[in-house]
Image: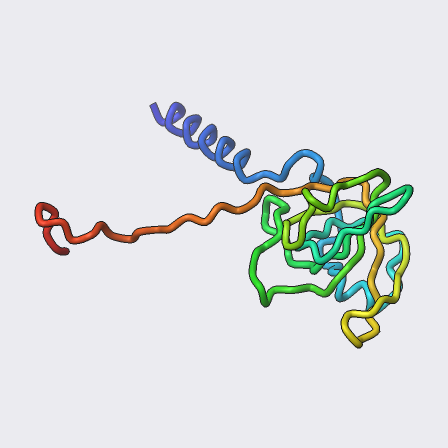
Length: 163
């Protein structure tokens, strides 16, 4: 009987861990400690990264599409963590092909995997900013987050009483 319990606990743990895994295109070994902010402090050209965040701007070009991103840390599933003050700098990710700016709109969450191909200097307002440029292998657009109103306790209906 104890072997059956142990087997059911192990099976349950495996099922739960499968639910929290990353999408297949985002799996792999990456330098997790290297953020875009840290990448501009040194020279990290060629490093494999998995970065994500919110779209600031999409630039379709003749041979590729480039995304200017505000980087955030990633959750265990690889999805960008959504918090307005949790930023890790900015980066540019480019991928061959056309990605429609109507779909990849401002503030959508995207995760990229690829190599740092160099650095670009651009202006953010009046400030000269050094962007790490990622040559992306994967562009993973996350579904929009739906707003959910959470009710912690029911309304005080007469037949429910008060707590």
